[in-house]
Image 1 (cartoon, rainbow, N blue to C red):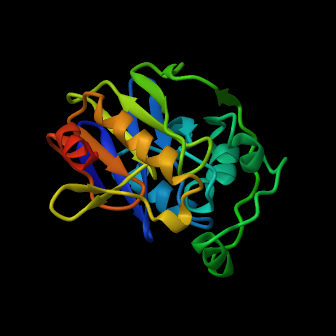
Image 2 (cartoon, one colour):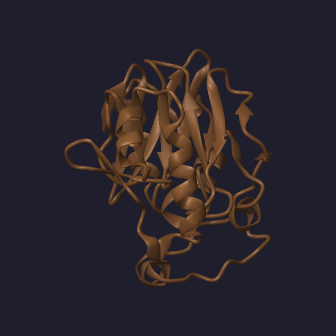
Length: 223
């Protein structure tokens, strides 16, 4: 675990990252990692002198198992509300089965499917969340309901999810095309993020950019 901005912590859970933010009234968790890793999330909270019961909101960027894997267990034990986009919510709750394609089929051979979890609040538009300081930005492409979250802190902290990835040297890369539902929409979403103002960007996969992050997105975006 490491603190990438004031009160913003990154937790490595295998090849995927989850993040949590200490706020005035508790903790907000962004994504939950691979199934079976709740104990690591709980340990990271303890290292930050917080506890699982402090988590009152779980923001999900999208429906893939490596991001929603522990959401059901963490919600059950913390009573946190789960927030996700309406387009991905049926897959997250188990109301709809989405066949795995490409690399997701390979991943399914090694990772048990996540437990379905109720979605307490569905997003359908960009804008402020009930959690003060957070704004939702719909970034479809990787999945239809992919959402990135922008936190008004430290010059702006962008939780990119899998809309893009972070590479060594502080550069931005596309998410793997074989795991992206609509590559044209995904490229448009990255371009849209490049138009926002933020200093820090954290990713589901790859290294965080802790300064001048919006500029790195603009450098990446095709002109």
